[in-house]
Length: 138
Image 1 (tube, rainbow, N blue to C red):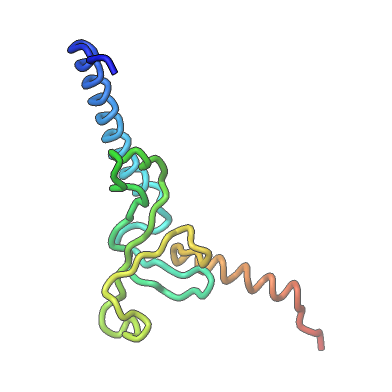
Image 2: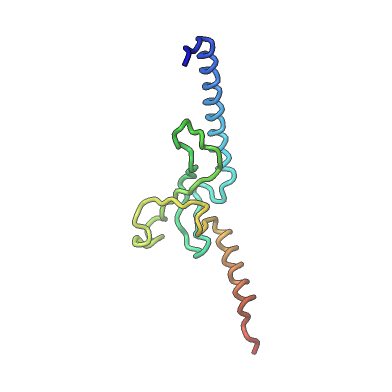
């Protein structure tokens, strides 16, 4: 390879700085956007939508590729997980929650969401059961 000129080195530094600045701007915007679009906010209770069981109180929204290395190049989506902590004394059985915090991905097969979403899912499930297996009329 031929030696690179000082002018081209300066251009490359400029472009690299512009890319880094754009990535940091995107990262900040994604952090703020996740807060706006999360179904369950920090401090609210998170529920398993299949069982209706409370998983705990949301302590953070953890974006999947937030600190992925490679200059955060892959930090380009709003995919995130919820970090939750179990309720205080009497709120949960310690056997069910052996650790202080737990992370549940919002895209798990199980699905997680707010109390309203858990109620809506349970009502839908009940309506489906009633439709598929109607009670005999006396």
